[in-house]
Image (cartoon, rainbow, N blue to C red; front, side):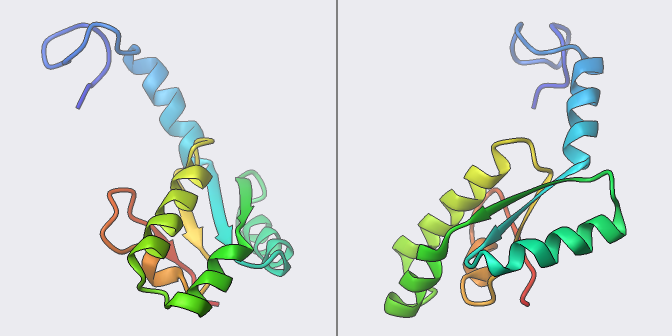
Length: 123
């Protein structure tokens, strides 16, 4: 893993300086994303996050098709698990430090065997 800048221990010469990495890491800690399978949860989670930390950047991804598919093929279907993982990667792509899956049906797939990991808020 690169620790920033072209110096000993850094694998590439195009790494950002440590101060840039610190700024990126700080911004990431201030950003959370939610993966929902229904738009009804957006307002609830906005309210909960704002009550806990009004400065936290919140992003919501709504993927209703994941729940519909899970109901058809089962939540442990490998193709569905991959789609859940892809949705979480997509949700994290804007810099979220964590992605929380709010669907109890596909929540298990969000944290199963993926390097991104994940967190499920079974509500």
